[in-house]
Image (cartoon, rainbow, N blue to C red; front, side, top):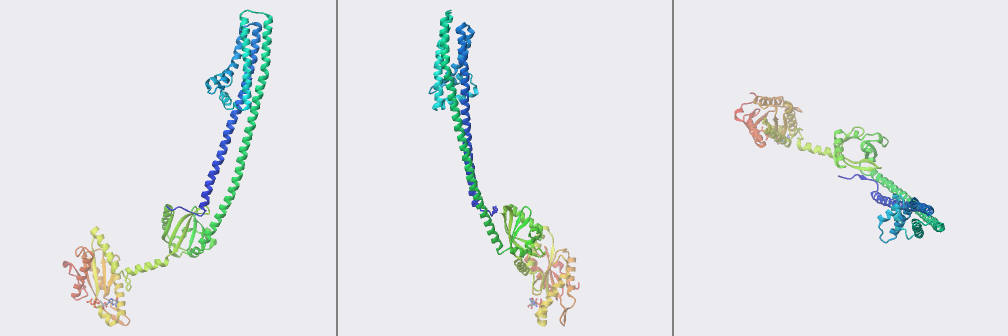
Length: 547
Ligand SMILES: Nc1nc2c(ncn2[C@@H]2O[C@H](COP(=O)(O)OP(=O)(O)OP(=O)(O)O)[C@@H](O)[C@H]2O)c(=O)[nH]1
């Protein structure tokens, strides 16, 4: 199937679409990178926020522990010691996580368990673990962990003090001096912890702010990169599409010029509504159209028969092109002519169209018809000639062989025609032959075929009925038609004919036998004194003109 012809420069559009794909990929890659970075950055900020929250819980637990231990030191109430232990568990949970994550191959489940004990939100724990492990080398993070470690050392002192307070309480020592000393020591530990907690929060806050700045900077850079690339590419694309448009316009102008000056009629018709978009000078002349009336002309009106047009378009729809399609057309004045058309589906002005180039072949067709007429008709009498008669006889034989029908063949020869030629001249002989042909045609039935074999020999094929009476009647009618005298110039002459008849299938079943036997019967008629007709078959040799 032929591809539609595109007038647009195909090379340019191919390169352009490849470039567009590349640009789309590039932009997608930048956007994906920025998104990934944002996701990762937000994760980091969230983990930082979780540590700050965790530090709050840690500080509160530490305060609760100190407060409960202070009460226990004073009143030795077991519930105060339980409160102390519960608060301490938060701090020890965070410590468990930290110690685990400090290891080269940490047990992450244990670290997670530690953070859970530290009352951190389960959703934050993965981020906290990730931040600890992957950003440990960042100075602010490293410093925060160092503060945490130092605070844990203070917690060890707190725990040692708690153990001593517990031991003296269980031993029942209620020495006021000892209690006072223990409370003072507790207070000192608490005082040393406070700045560490502040430092931890401040360090993490600084880290979060730095991360935020880096994140924003990268986001702005990504956006600026995207914007710059978009401006660059769009400027380039605008330039390119201007170039393509220019090339397109030039291509169209060239095509129009080419079509305009092409040495044969060319028409472009829009497929959607059959509007003629273009017709060159030759087409206007061929169809006798004005350029101004093109838009309102309907291409269908130029086809002589609508069926021809439909057949042509059915072929065109299937194959997208048609070449040397011969069709009868007509111009705007209704004058018909034969055209040989070649059509091609094209994209013209961005629209689906059909380009048609046609050749007026009226003269060639007429010559063809004339040659055909000469090949099958007798010049002198205009009757079918021997060739055509033989074809018709052959067809008749084939038909009757199939359907079992019959027909009669009459072989007719003008009697003593030579004398007429000799005495009145060849021209008179010709006129006589024309008159004989006319009388023959007028005397037979419409379905009978009359032909001239050559010279003064004629044949009649009788197909309507073939019973003896009917054929005899036909032969008599022919002879009766010859009876009136013929008039040429000042001459009046009487002409007779002899007829031989063969009948299918009695007298032959093939062409040559049928012809030969009719000829034999005609000679028999000549022998019997001319001006009569004879059947070839013996049982029918009965008829005479006067019978
Ligand atoms: N005028 C004219 N004569 C022709 C033409 N073709 C053949 N003839 C002549 O027709 C004559 C045919 O004569 P024949 O059929 O042989 O003899 P006939 O004189 O008709 O005698 P019978 O057939 O025996 O009755 C010949 O003289 C041919 O030259 C033609 O086209 N025009």
